[in-house]
Image 1 (spheres, rainbow, N blue to C red):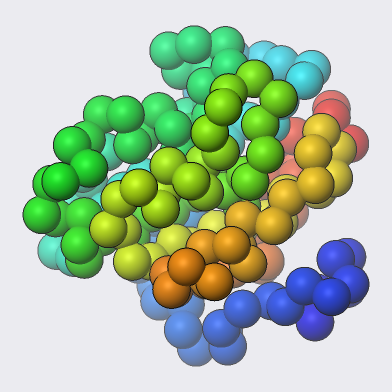
Image 2 (cartoon, rainbow, N blue to C red; image 1 turned 120 degrees about the vertical axis):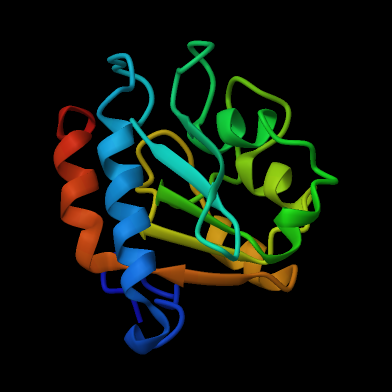
Length: 163
């Protein structure tokens, strides 16, 4: 049970987290430092990585548009029919959103439009702007979701001005 979000489960046991997962999440966190400043949105980085460890796509919040989320930016740069996505992992420094104030579709919905089977993130989205249950929605849709809360303090630090 996640103490900061009663009723929400942490996800798989820590042994489900690989060294590659930790490395890619650290890279996503580093990428989030490129986000243009905002007082109304989190700074997030994301990578889509194929089964062989090659980057298929990357993105960060507000990269091309002031309302753009990291997962949205990454997924926009790859064809959803790309066969590499069937075995890829999406790494995001923050839990994929389930509600947006500025777009009609959430990042969780955009991920579900692809065959990406596995999502790994560091920090549960706090209820600062919207209430989020991205991990649960993705799991309910049959995706594997892995949370790595040990890296959450790094993401919180980048977004401390919003908390």
